[in-house]
Image (cartoon, rainbow over all chains, first blue to last red; front, side, top):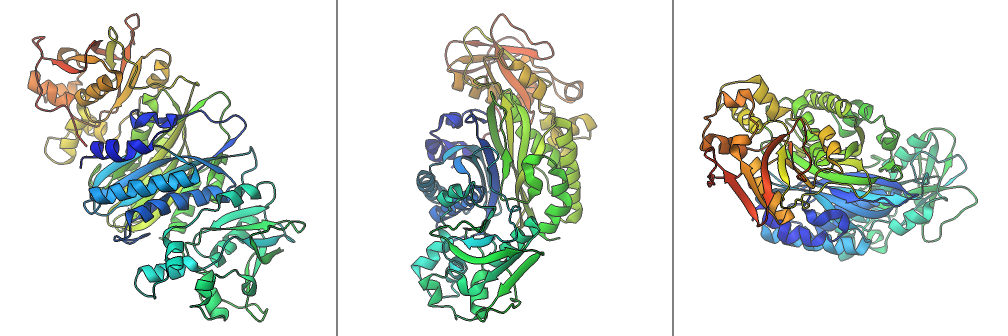
Length: 306
Length: 306
């Protein structure tokens, strides 16, 4: 299928927003809402690096959108539109692109985001998929990693470590489990929570490389020390069923990537129902991990280092 | 070099705009100017497809920015910021990335655009470089391909076919010429002209796949017939020196890609000094090419078909 046919048949039907201009002009045109800041992010997923070549293309599209919207969630933004950079190899045949477009549409509908434009190229050695997401937030209210203060509390959404176990299932290294595999393949960006955190959280980011390493990054960005208490870390029943409840087992979950949960700090006077308190912010710099006995210990790794 | 070191050492120094937040948050935050529309485009360049693996990385960065800003120019927009999706293979070593960053900085400075954010991934089979460009334009004034009316005149900026000859030089198929090679490797987005066309041109687009095929696309988008007179087409002296001045020679230049000139239509009452009148708009649909004898003829191809 030629690029222009592919775009006309499979992608143009997704570009129903007036901003997209039917994908017929050189660029998209957006009238920004008055009194809002815009938030921009761009993440890339590569076949064989971020997903497996045999993965369902519908899941790949879902994840591509989800990881970008997770960045918007971490800023407290509401998604508006996306631009798609589709780099395809011979392996992405018409069936693959059809499945990808269907998955993208489903994810776009779920999160209320429009396809505004992009580019499609073919002839690559392996697929490389880029997506730019644009969101909006109250002016001056975008969340940042840098605002945590000593005395704040540390919170995380959802459960930690599921996606890492899901990856092991996807690669055949662990026994199947639908919940865990879905947590790896179809992450859920915490958009509603992110918007709720605006004006409340002192710092926020999404957990993409592991709770521990991302907590360390938040600590460095804020110039504070963060203490995580592994005994408080939220663990799903599916993950608990296959993980030893000891320091090494919990640290393994806390250093696995792809959670796409939100990590945030709150001033001492606030709590966040539905999220889990996992630690505290103090003076100093860096990360302190408390084991089940309440004593600091040094995990063998903190997360995925790029 | 690890990704985070690469970003910190080579890309973060380019991200001096407050919008970029030092590349330390999950996304960039931009306060859009009141009373402007925003224009978004995303183009991908792949090693071995859009450029040659041995090409100077500084030129690759220049071209990546230029082809995106050419889309903004075609909409009449003024560039504001870019997001960069850098997908690298083992071939892009530290020297390559250093050269790329230097070329990107030079091009960003030339066109007054800021690096707002992006993503870097490594481990690809070959480099794939995506760029999202964001620009601004007077509200409701963005140019489109669809506004040409019968009676309008057709114009093009610069000279046509140079970059196609430059590509033949780059691949060793033609004798060297610095001007033509530069036209292929370092295109100049026609930003000032694009902004000048706002409120004057009835339709506009950039010429990326060949003057003839892009004129046909403009005709289809506008629902008109476009007549191009090859005798009027602007040709550089360097291109003229190695091209037969007959219908086949001129049609070869007019069907070569990578010009990144602006093609636009004006109402009959207007002219555009510095650009060249190359044809006219009439009733009907599609493209008519006039040869040197003033008679219609059918070129063997119209341009690069994706």
